[in-house]
Image (tube, rainbow, N blue to C red; front, side):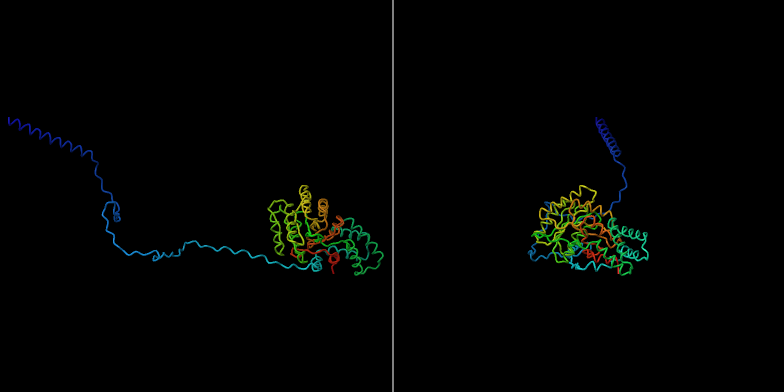
Amino acid sequence: MEIVILAVVIAVVVVGAIGGLVVGSRKKKQLPEAKAPSVTPTITAPPTEPHVGDEAETPRDEPRRTIEEVDLPVAEPSASAPVVEEAPAAPPAPEIETPEPTAGRLVRLRARLSRSQNALGQGLLTLLSREHLDEDTWEEIEDTLLTADVGVAPTQELVERLRERVKVLGTRTPEELRALLREELLQLVGTDFDRAVKTESGLETPGIVMVVGVNGTGKTTTTGKLARVLVADGRSVVLGAADTFRAAAADQLQTWGERVGARTVRGPEGGDPASIAFDAVKEGIAEGADVVLIDTAGRLHTKTGLMDELGKVKRVVEKHAPLDEVLLVLDATTGQNGLVQARVFAEVVDITGIVLTKLDGTAKGGIVVAVQRELGVPVKLVGLGEGADDLAPFEPEAFVDALLGD
């Protein structure tokens, strides 16, 4: 019996040992193979802050400073700090100029005029000085006059008078020929016209002058130079920039005005020209100005709608006061084409005077005769250069003397 019990105990122990070995081997099979430890950088952690519930050091009493005792930190200048640029100073006001007096201005510009016009005057003197004035010579005289844009009818009249007077004169010394030709040219140019620019209305309103013309004749520049002429004669001027279609036309006119202290009334680009002209006259009346100059847009005489608008400007201005002067600006170098322009403008507005520009750059001074004959109105001003004071009142005697030279 004891032997049996002992055998059972031994069997239980053996079974338990075998079970333990089996379990141990299974666990070893489930474990992954051990790998070599990876090398990681050593990181030194900062000292830990006390957490909630941890014991903290007992605070110590320290003397405290008031806000007045605390100094603010001084900011050190940084090399990369942006540099604040000072605002540019406003441009100085333009200096008001004193224009050159207009009296005798054409005489002072005579040398410049005579250099370009000698082809007419000197050419005629040379031909008339020939010993025998045959038909070929008279034809050359006619050609000289026609080339100078005198026009067909005035040329024929002048040649006929010269033929008669030379025949009566008989002997022809240079002095006699020059006096003869001067007299005939003066009669052709005309000495009985009233060539003063009308700038006095006779009412309590300013004199109103409207400047018209096609593109490229120097109309805006002429308006600015005319302001200088009037200021030089002691008149106060207001400028109306009614040319709203050409870029920078108003700026150009305002610059001319600022140089002589004349104010410019202007509107937005592309605005209504009649409205600006109306406002300019209104401002001139309010300021008590002597003259209001209105620069209109350069009209192509072939554009019917634009020409109609020019007539509208004239009608609107006359709601304030009647126009005293309508000046047509013509380029002297355009010759007979300028006469076509003149005719169309005369149909739209009543032209009262002519301004011939670029007369210094052409030998076609005869256009003075032709345009006066065409319109029946006088040439009142001539432009003889690019200078600010190169616009001169037209004086027939000085002009003819410049044609003939010394």
